[in-house]
Image (cartoon, rainbow, N blue to C red; front, side, top):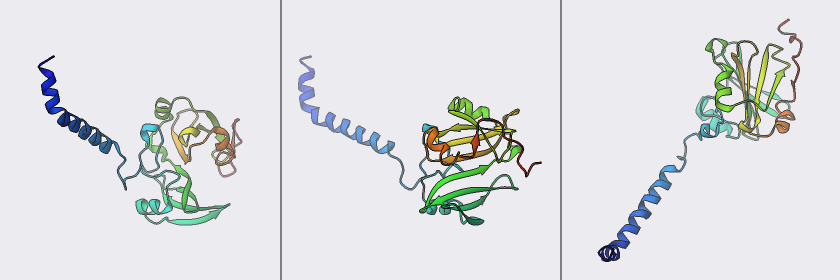
Length: 193
């Protein structure tokens, strides 16, 4: 012990400098990279096209995906439509005040994406509800804290549609984007009959 004390006295400043350098390096490497899309998958937040989430600016959206194929107005929202993997339908992105508020993405049925992958990753949903527009064959798995609703076929679990929104509680979701969802299976929509 007596031999270490003179060595410590002689090199304490170097040791302190080294620890400070390592600490600053660690801090720098853990900072989010400026300009890169914020990925929040570690927080179980799904991203549209692996880069877009509600809350981002419309400029970010256009920079990443280009101009929409069409635009329209619905209630207080401007709706931007982009091609989806399901050729028959478009992804609808609801915006207000130059911010993305809600994304409704149809999923190509042939992709064989199943609800089990979401159940394994996120656990049981806060609610299971039906969308009157999709009919009684599709059940919505609602994860409001993650800003996600996933609609899948009730028998085979194949995903047909994904909704992205700002994380909220169930009541907040049901009074905004989920206001047309119901607990019991609805009748077949007119477009399907």
